[in-house]
Length: 592
Image: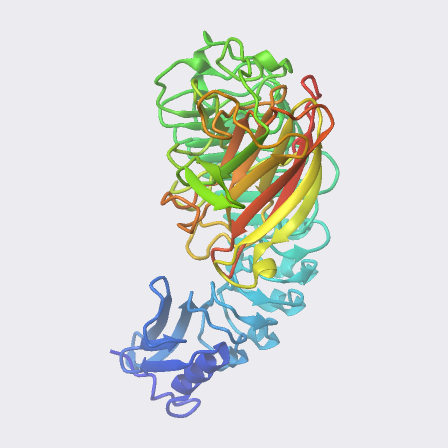
């Protein structure tokens, strides 16, 4: 039992009054606190909080006087609170931890906070604006600072170099400017560092080699010059190492294969060359993502072991014939070899298939993303939308239907979701829409948005890729759920009417993969069960559909429409690329 109402230094009930002021500033309409037991009974916009909400007040009492108690932690998490950050925090001198993540809090970080003894600040996924205060560097005891998914701008202040006790620093999905500072070397106890699409540019400072306690390093989507692979020899405790789209050249260091605790390695979309280590000593390795590099040689047999997920797509490896060890049937692993070869001939484009021939062509294609076949009546005609929901996706999974020649190639791993949904995305060629924000476009949930693009098709090949580049929250409505959905895609030729190919299948049913064949390559984003999607929530798939080329003569024009629904008030931004290429077109560099 504690008693917060007998606060001699500041008067009776001072801490309780401060808590009530804090709740009001945060925008809470309901507030009830049991001071005797240090327990929040009601807080938030409704009497019954959301099922994912967290409310916690933690108190600590003197070991010699159980009535001398102080508040050391406040957590009002995922309550949709619409207020501002409370400067009244300063009235709680013993407070150590603040967690106001996953709300709608706006405004700036109060300077009053910088005169406290805080050790933890978690403000992820809100709507704060302005710059990171220089005065945060005065929080000498700060161990954890989480600012991801806000609207913060400017650079990282030099004063943060003074945070020598920092162990966890996350600045994902911001609009920061400037380079990654070298003063991070002062954070000698750092165990987790996340800079996913932060806005900062590279190169990654060489001082990162001094970290010897790092377990979780995630840096992605940084510009800047080409750089060698950063030296990480001193960090032997890695469980997750993510260096995606960091403009890294050279070979994969062999010492990475000896990291015994390594579970996830993502080096995708760089300029890595040479051969792939076998990672024989990395016994806990579950995901290895190497897509979009220039790797050569064979897929190591030692890497193709039970339970592992490997993505080697978009590289320069040797072509995998049906007799190759990587093409063995019934292997208990996910292996993606789509376009992993340096061979550009269309007949050798797909792995593990001796000769690929596109059997028939179509002049249109309609896809019900994530659902079953669906017939829609429009303009006195029936349009069949081919469903893809019955085919299971997954991390680094490659699938090809040998009868109707359609398939998909998924790449990447959704981190922090216990492997609930897995896939990531690539983007190539001509960018036609950048940072599309469905929340700003739709302004409300469940409102359909259609985007149309006209592109020239050369030699029967068209590719459309929808990709997430790191922007947008990855924690709402729950951890691991990403962005808006793509509910339907339609491809129509302007040179020939939409017609069946005489094969007995419905329009667009015959589908396939690859440059050099007539195909449509698509990423589908399905984070929840929304109209037009299946029950398999949260599957972003790199889909490739064949046979949209009947009637698409050289240089014909095609109208592409993408229909999507916003699934919540928070959404990621999406980039859209189109690719028009011929049968022997040189592969372009992947980018994200």
